[in-house]
Length: 139
Image (tube, one colour):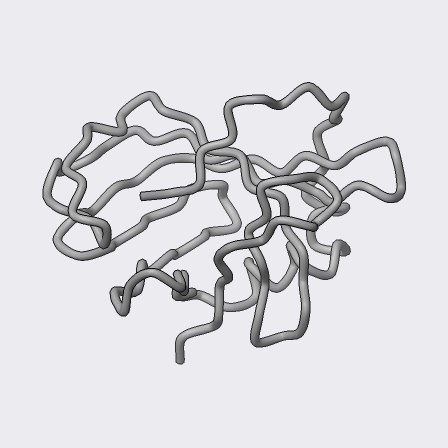
């Protein structure tokens, strides 16, 4: 369902909430209440709701998962910030890809690259070269 990054060897440090709200791509995630994850391989849209308290709800297909997210930034100015989501609940229904895999306890790491207020990419790498999906605000 989400992008899984299994190799994460960069040295990252946690951002404070104040730094988070000042970060352009990340402040957008908190400003808009609802986001749709657009994937090139399906017309199904996953709906993300990020709250300032650090919780997230994702609904895709029939699946509903919830969890907590944290934001990490690199000490290196050329690397993108990352959002890490740890899943806590999963109704184990089919997601947009048809998977019913139980995601409780799984963590995902996505690097955040803002193209515009209407498009924030989830990238596989910290340099933003492999960004297969993006979020768009839902009104």
